[in-house]
Amino acid sequence: MTQLPASPRALPFFLDSAPGQRFCLYHPPAGECRGAVLYVHPFAEEMNKARRMAALQARALAALGYGVLLLDLHGCGDSSDDFGDARWEAWRRDVALGCDWLREQTGHTPSLWGLRLGALLALDHAHHAAPGSLERVVLWQPVPSGALHLTQFLRLRVAGEMLDEGKEKSGGTEALRAALKAGETLEIGGYGLAPQLAASLEQLDAAALPVTGCPLHWLEIVASPERPLPPACTRVTRAWEQAGLEVRVHLVPGQAFWATQEITECPALLEATCAIFGGSA
Image (tube, rainbow, N blue to C red):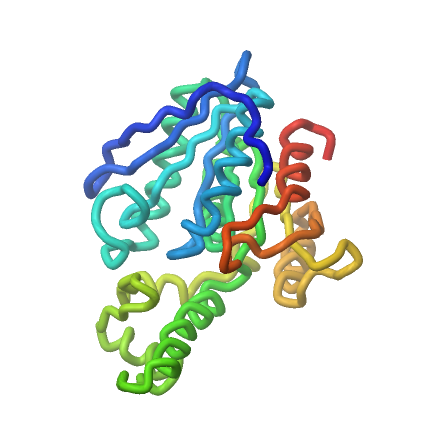
């Protein structure tokens, strides 16, 4: 395991929001503050799998002089309510809330750093944000399509039904989508997926969320540096480039730590991200 960098002790607290409160963990900068960063976590169980990497990166950025805020979105982690109460619009408000808090706390324009679906949420916020309101956007393994991510999540339910011989079969992902459209909340891997959240995911496409006014970095984990960006991701970056947007793609060797059975790390991803924030990327 990677040794956590030395930095001031993280400060836990709750931010008032609507509805309820959001649990936050703030990593103060070591020495003079040079910037602020908000981490936007991934979806469902991927959030828990990624906690180790989020902590490592937050402490590394704090050691570089950044104030880093890790915020549990509505219905996630230690924030108010259950996952079944989560809505995309509320998550967007949570990102705005975290940015406002960092701006007031540090006096700096915040950067966004998102992982997987959290990267898509960061993109959605940045796409609609006022010019100059963000310093940079850093995407870790961003989900290119909300609909594709929803399909992958629904497959967990289908796979679980196949393993349980005594459980009634739902009929596949299309049948599960039909149940969601009919207003049913689905239980998948211990998480209640509300039809409202599923409907929002169906509409999300990273290609339709270009970000202007700040540097945009896409960090993709690959089996080896020689491997190209996956086709679904290439579709997004080409659409952005055709719209005149510059995106800096970083191919990083490592494991899919958000999905591995055991908690794993990706040191190369930590180094690449520190290089971006340290100005050497």
